[in-house]
Length: 437
Length: 74
Image 1 (tube, one colour):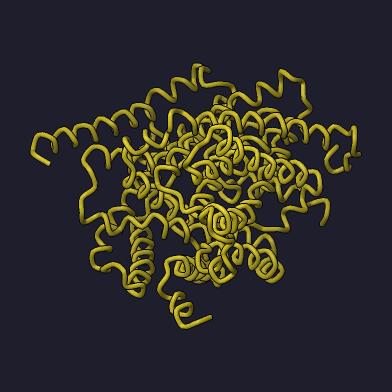
Image 2 (cartoon, chains in turn cyan, orange):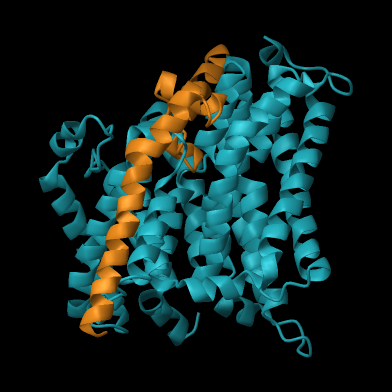
């Protein structure tokens, strides 16, 4: 590393995302933070559950803690003034609280309408009605919140869990995913001739891996615009709810076994909560198969983000006339936070679990996912605040993103059914007793 | 922004929030109760299931299923 590279460690947002991610993970894994505050669940007829369930003191401590960490990083990077960041940060945190009020209502949860929807919606609503005041702008650090959240998310990707469903789940979840991504990439860029390549890869990754989470990772790895992510997330959330409702009907109509039907839904419905709900309607066996296949697919997210980042640096961002960039150039342009994302996963899988045991790590991950949830919520609010309807309409390119999603999802559904049938029908491979019972 | 457009902006914001609240308080529960939202939503309401988890670490059921699968190996 030359002198400027060493300086990058404290001057680049990517590296700070890693440092902050590991600091936040460390507070939980080292036992300094045992419980991360979250907004309570409530039902429309029981507003008292909401008001009595909010722990204002803990939320203030969380907000101050995050503000100190992000403000400190901004101060060291020296690009923005910290004092102008602070007031806006607390307003964005407040909007994140409001997002969770909407998202944690019981009926909303039953419909599977996640916090991402409400956060983007709230941001968009504010930006396109009263507008974003100048003093709020310095706190809109979309990429910084996303990248730090992704590093924390890496800790939840436990490789040991892949073994739970063995080669069967791997074949369904990992066999189909790369094929669908490559198919959608070529369909989007060659057939639809979409010029917005980040949007193509975000939609392809969201469709084939795990919806919103994958869209965030792909957007960060391909340096996409806010509007691209908003469009991809919007389409994914709408179709996730639709598929949660209609896929079980399709499985029943086709007379598929619960195991096959569950695995099919796990490989195609984008979000974990919707996958579990759709599977549960068909029985516990379908639910378990659906959840496990989806989980194995979730674990692919780090590898996919890494591959997208490398592909982007070496192929997409390279001028057609130029030679392939050397390793130094690739390293310079590579989104470094992805290394933190992968490192967090490896540390959790191969250091924390052997040291502390799976149960302890699982309960710790419930705290880290809450921190990540806050960061992603603030990121989605920031995305909404930075997006406007006119720019989004321009990105729709005459409906091409929707065509890409529909064609890609149809291909995904057909291919996943075929592979799941090959693997789980017992025609080609004998089923292990643990799956038969 | 002049006073008129500022007022219109706040009015639109209030309208947007009002639509969201109407959706949560009236439309979605009514659709679920009548069965128009589909069998899965009805089941989610009946079992009070949270279907909003985006990633597997956000879903408590995933951990329960993982534990159940781990048992025979122990």
